[in-house]
Length: 327
Image 1 (cartoon, rainbow, N blue to C red):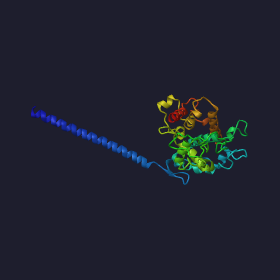
Image 2 (cartoon, one colour; image 1 turned 135 degrees about the horizontal axis):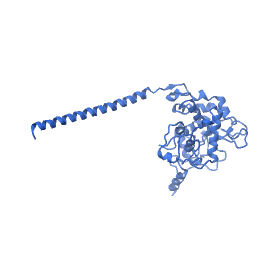
Image 3 (tube, rainbow, N blue to C red; image 1 turned 90 degrees about the vertical axis):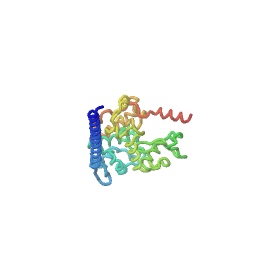
Image 4 (cartoon, helix red, strand yellow; image 1 turned 30 degrees about the horizontal axis):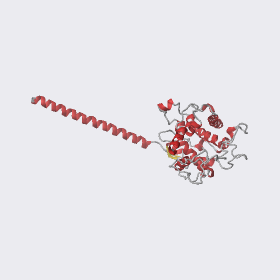
């Protein structure tokens, strides 16, 4: 090879190497700048402090629950809860609700979005609570939706709700895990998981949820704000729009809205079975509260029901797992 040609080749190699270093440095610089911008944006995200009810969160920059939901409105929604025929007279009150909510408002509970979304979520959450704790019936004074917070526990348990195959939260001797609370809790594994979430030993003391109204509300709010399983949405997420359905969700007719909150909380207990009464009762309470708070049922939102939704967690899979463990 001639010296002149060889020198040209060496020169080209050097130029290409320099170019590669320059490009790599530029890419690294761009990536570094991008990371820096993201960190600056994160550090500049506005947070607000509104005293004991909501502090240290961007959600606290919105109205808090006490800004738009007052004592008289709570009394109006649950007007029959302290009548002589009710089963939890004197237990539920506005103060215990707000004290529990103050733990979750900084996380977005009824503080996500604008005022209308906040009121919608409040009515959605309370709609589930009202339906779960109602002792109303078709001919009851005021109608069945007027009797929310009538109960704080299951009155005639048919069993102790002990899943003896669950090793993570094993049943405690002599303890019964029948339904208690605002969003009724059943089974040892649910008491155990929720107890971990709210830092209370509910596995050994499930009775706390029928003895302390603030804890009963807190357990319900924890359940609303947290998914049953990882990589699944919470009831809060599917309602306020944080959840984006996957292709599989779409194929299974799961879409954001009030209907999906029932899917998250109850699965095939209320969903995927057509327009059954158990599902319709929850919707009725939600819309009743929307009307009473002046939002109006016409703003119930899309995907109101879960009649055709495939459950996130079908109960038959749990039955199969138990059979396999006992085999």
